[in-house]
Length: 302
Ligand code: FAD
Image (tube, rainbow, N blue to C red; front, side, top):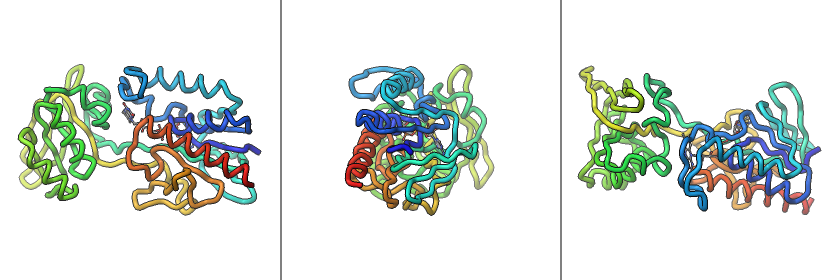
């Protein structure tokens, strides 16, 4: 069996594998798609010490780094079941069962898509999901935020400090964000809030040039010209297959303690699949390192 079996090959899983590999123990890493969400990112400007890089290039370097250690990398395989007997048993989609003394879950998350025309086409060409990452690209430009929950309103406040104008579009008749965020939002001079509207298309040529929406009460259609659309309608952790196995919060995120331990003994978790407050590359890497050290501590006490 492995000493540490990592599920997921994004920043969290890679960091966990490197930290575990450096202990000279038996480490495996299973990933459906090595690289994770970072592969969907073009420019990255917030990895400390690396002023600029690109998603594919960066995760290529991360993989090279993992390969410097004795880590079994199992790619293009999906984990479907986790059971704890004497050992942790991980069943893959192809039927293979991997056994390990500990496991680190780092399956990440996916941002919910609107599923409207233009969204896929203009991803990274004006359609964005992360204001901390892509906000500065829209300095002095007009942008929209789709989604009036906490993440949408936080994004709108953040963007209002950089962009020329921010339009917020919420499907429901009212914003869902906390009162204090709404207050802050409505105090800003360069923000327009549209409620009870359905965003129907993102338009553009080589990049985004606008957005179509419909008023839900009257059916009246409108177009707004802008350079960027931030889609913030929720983050879905890739944890459906772990329901009932480890404790999760009401958002389906795995609850972890300060050492990355889950409710199931010997099973740790890191990155966007957990209840960490912020979801970012360096934060995921830090929590991957934490989970590996937590797992190592657990192993030496066994
Ligand atoms: P992920 O990167 O989501 O990786 C999850 C891994 O688990 C993948 O390898 C996946 O294939 C695998 N997996 C999932 N389920 C299974 C399963 N059942 N079996 C096997 N493998 C599985 N953050 C920044 O800091 N800066 C940025 O500029 C930035 N830009 C972003 C732009 C976009 C478009 C997106 C989508 C995200 C961006 N982020 C950015 C956020 C950042 O990418 C995430 O916080 C980070 O990738 C999370 O790392 P992770 O390892 O937890 O999960």
